[in-house]
Structures are given as structure tokens and as C-alpha cells.
Image (cartoon, rainbow, N blue to C red; front, side, top):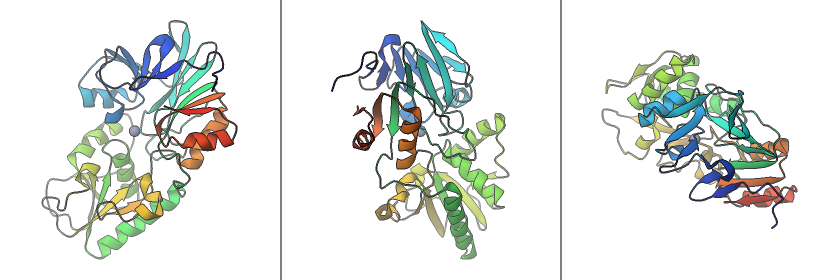
Length: 317
Ligand SMILES: [Zn+2]
């Protein structure tokens, strides 16, 4: 495969790097300078300096207890050497960001993204570019998500049924992002919401920057009859949660879209509410960005075959 001149600026050395600037993109370990797309732990490292969006900074500081960030507002251009740089929303969690780097060509790295609008995150944008480095977590046709509204309706019905049977519904969700969206969904449907402390700590940051999550309490091991609990996914495999009796586990994840996976989340019920793009959203993104070269940095490597069928030159790292 021959690369067109100027398109081989990304390389993968235990992480993606934009070579002309030695700028790591969600670098791991300890690098000089890295862009941090969002504060999920698999995107964080202990770098000298990091570039991130203004709204990601408080989550980064909370997680790493480091004040070495250069926060940037969305859509404001700045320069790194002679490259014009801009951050813009990826719609994954609050503050999550993509980066565009412009020299002779336009380069975009997406980080984690979804195109459908979540209730507690910004709407993702797609920019035309020459070279695109993207995630493809669900880059397989088995992962096609129903509309979010439909999935939310199913979750609400299921939660309602649990409460009618005097069971306590416990929704397992990522502490940062999904947890807060679940809180918002439940509170806006009038449920009595009770959240684990870990999810509460991130919820406070959401509220500080103006996201209304509705009413809720923090779980202190009290009686939960009539309440809906929101717990981190790390509790998912636990047979029993201390102090809880007669509860029903619910998992919200894109993996639940695969029919054979629906009932296998450690015995919990799965719903395909995802913060990532599904197969068709990934295709749509590439068609709209219309790059001459695509790099897949995470997810199904076979996604490159689908892009090749559509006429895009694609490579998986
Ligand atoms: Zn993420």
C-alpha cells in the first residue's frame, strides 16, 4: 500500500502519535505532550503537559490530581509550531473532544465518539479532513443500535416492572458519563434516584458546569425499597451488593446490541444504550469527513474492509 505524500504523519508506537509535533493522542504511560480526548482511565497517562477541552479539565484534575493541563475551549484555534489546531466535541461524554491539526493537510483524531445526541453531552461534530484517525469500538455490522429514545423507553418500562414486583433496580454504568446520563433519564421520569458515591463525585462536576441531573440521593446502605440505584460497572459481577436484598441488575452498554449477548452480563439485563458510535454511525462519520486515508486505532480491525468496499483507503493499527 503506498501512502500519498503527507498522509503518513500518524504512527503507532504503543499509542498514536502525530509525528511532526511529537504530540501523543490519548498517550499512555508518561510522554512529553499529549492530547487527552476525555477522562476515561484508558485514555489517561502521566504526561508532562496535556492539551484537553475546558470541560474535560475538572474530570482530569479529579482523576489524576495533576494541574499540568492546557485547557482549550471548543472551536478556538491555537498554534503548535506552525500547525493550526482546534478542538471540537465528540459527543462521547461531557467535554469529550476531537482534535484537528492543520498543516498542508487536515488531520483529525476522533477519540471516543458517538453521533447521536446524548442527554448530558455535547452534540458531536464532523469536519472534512484529509487524514482521519478514529476509534471503531463497534465497527462490526452486529452492532447496530436502535434509536436512543426507543432504548430509554425500554429501560424505563423494565425499571417500572421491577419496582412493581418490589425489586430494587440497580443500573450499572460507567462512573463518568453514562452514570450521569442514567441519573438524568431516571430523574426526568420521576423515579427516586439513589447513586453510588463514585458516580456522585462526577455528578457534582457535571452540575458545577451547569448540567442539571435532577434530584437524587447518595447510597449510604439504607433501605432502598421504591428507589432506583445507579452503581459503577465494577459492581456488576458481584453476587451481592452489601446491604441490598432482592435487587435486579441492569447493564447499559453497546455490547447488548448483539442478540447473543443480551442476557449474559453476569446475569444482569442488558440494554444497548452506548456512548460510542454504532457500525452505521462509524460509516456515516467517514463518509462525511471524506478523508483520503483512515487509520483505525481501536476496535474491530475488520472495519477497514467495509471502508475499502466504499472506496476509502484504510489501515488498522
Ligand atoms: Zn471513553
